[in-house]
Length: 217
Image (cartoon, rainbow, N blue to C red; front, side, top):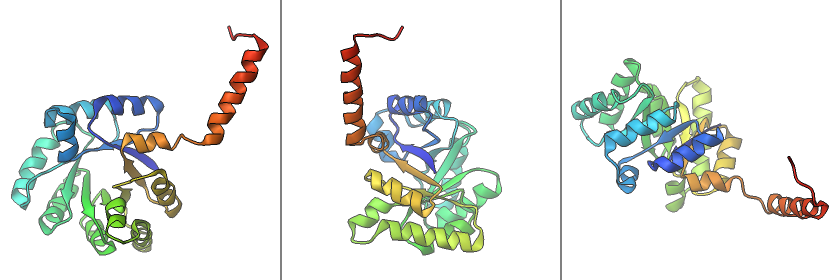
């Protein structure tokens, strides 16, 4: 499973990139606003840090304007992935961009039927929002399982990018189902390291080492 960071915070992206865990980055207008940076320059800097796909989202709602914005965004760097909403105009834009060799991330997916449409439109990634799905009383992981089954039935190349990840078990469950990618805030990725037995084991080793009075080097 590929790990994408769902953030526009440059320091967090640099930190994750240094671990070797970072395969890509997803941004959206809300994350860019939170970072306080200029949209274009922030995306450009992220692309220079992370060589993998970096999603930059259009804000237009009609096809013609989406295409105009996409033209601006894909000139930023070769690894920019254009992010479009799962609407008729969004999928029309997805088809046009995909046919032209541009990576496309179709976002705000909440049903398997929508995911099927995105795959038929040639999306590189489909982003089902599991956390938001859970929020309204549905099981987000059931959605991932349905999409995985449908895509496998027809050998669709579209990658399932699990979004709106709220906790480490979302990551583990998505991996068990066979999702291709997950995107999560850096704090969730760091939580994957945590286990009380790891912490207690380190503490015990350090205590025993200190008792030897030795040093390394």
